Image (cartoon, one colour):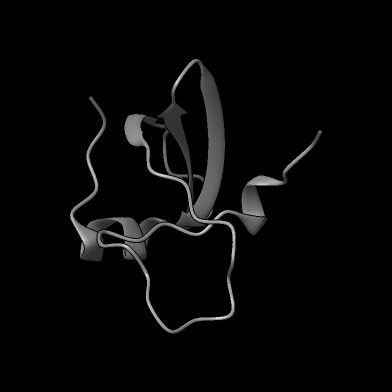
Length: 67
């Protein structure tokens, strides 16, 4: 299965009353370097790593940090 990083959203709390139905809990393991205003984030979910791609500005606003 392939899940594109740009399709993975990050929430600090469990989302409620939204259309997204697939919600997984995980822990940020790494935040890659900023490139053109974008960062790639690695999220550990059990033995699997999922990647998310968001703006660097939003990562700062959310206070995201790697492990």
